[in-house]
Length: 199
Image (tube, rainbow, N blue to C red):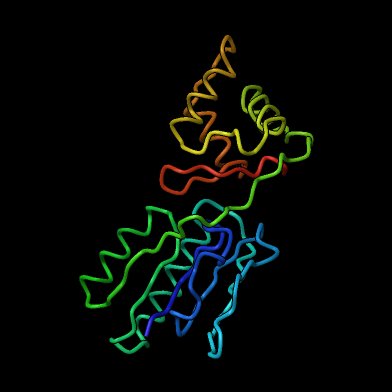
C-alpha cells in the first residue's frame, strides 16, 4: 500500500501522477490553488483522495502543514504502508531520510513533464508605505515583469535586485530581499523563490 502526500502548491497538477498506484492521496493546497487538476481517474477501482486546504500564507507554510500531517499519519499507519512525498522541493529530502531511519519506507516523487501553472503578471497595485524606496521599486518592477521571466532562485533574485537598484543609496540586496520576505511579497522554499507581488 502506498500513500501520497502532494505539495500541490509546488507541483500545480496531479495529471502526471498515476492515481491507481495509491491507496490514499492527501493533497495539500494553498490559497493560490482554487482548483485542483486531477487528470484521468483510476479505471475500475477506488482511489481515496483527501484535499487539505491551507488558508494562511507564509514562507514554507504549506510544507509545514504537510510535514505535520505526515507525522501524525506515520504514527497510526501500518508499518507496511509506503509514503510518497510528491514535490520537487528539495526541503523534503531531510524528512524523507529521517522517516527511512525510523523504519518507514518513504521517497520523494517529482512529477516529470507536469505543467506547472503559468504565473500571470500581477495587477499593478499601490505598494504599502512600510517598504523602503528600493523595495517599492523592486515590487513595482516585478509587477510589470512577466511571471515566467522573474528569477526563480534566491541568488538570481538577489542579483536582479542589485541591477534594479543601482545608484540608490542604502540599496543592499540582502536587506531588500529580507524586507520583501517580511512583507509577504516573496516566499522562499529551499533556494526557490515564488511571488505574491499583487498584494
